[in-house]
Amino acid sequence: MQASGVQSIKASKSFVDEVAARTAGLETKWVADAKAKGLANADAVLRDYRAEIKKLQ
Image (cartoon, rainbow, N blue to C red; front, side, top):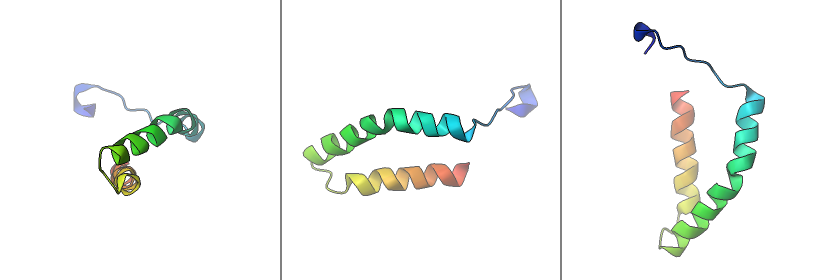
């Protein structure tokens, strides 16, 4: 993307923390809904997803 002139800006820790706090309820609901649909390890799936994202940062 930089080759085509697109700038990338890293979000501040405080911004990332605020977004995480505001979306925590959505993640909790997703885990509950996924478990209700039969995904027994929904917590682990979300944790693994977050771990993969950290690898890319």
